[in-house]
Length: 223
Image 1 (cartoon, rainbow, N blue to C red):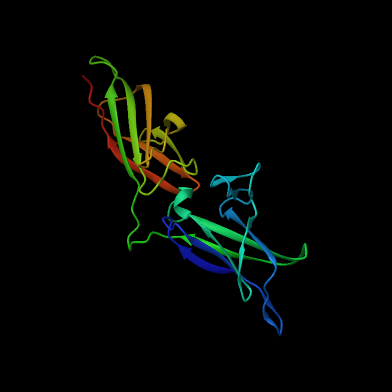
Image 2 (cartoon, rainbow, N blue to C red):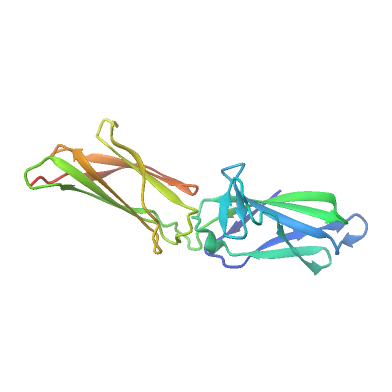
């Protein structure tokens, strides 16, 4: 198993396999396939038919590789269509068959990295707005921006709101999105807050990265 790096925006990442026969060299004419597993989950594999990671119900889980000669087999993968972030690890699982008989398998690990030198940070904006001018009952409005994310369903976000002691004001809820430009949103109504207290939020990006708890300085303005 070797390590490979790729950008989440690559549109034709090569899923490449080399098959060598001892004392002979590269062996052509084999039937070779590849599966792509989400590294953080032992059960979720890419369905090549719709570019979605699933635990079951695949249309095309084993993607055929093209024999390009001298023992080299390859197929392109559009990583940009998967909606993944830098930091995600993929495992490529290859199999080679001769006349229907499995003769060998191998694997590679692909680490997705940002093409630029610095990794962009998720951008979170949260506001607390009074339901009416005379009430301490508030609603949270949260917006989360993830650069380079497409609306493929491969990435989701959870957010919860907490007081300074860490007690949950609002249990973790799924944010709506992402939209085509990578924006998640969530509105949580009817939360009673103190107007002089800073509140916190926890955001978890599922299947990609985890944003540690951070103070956003949410100080509600009543009235």
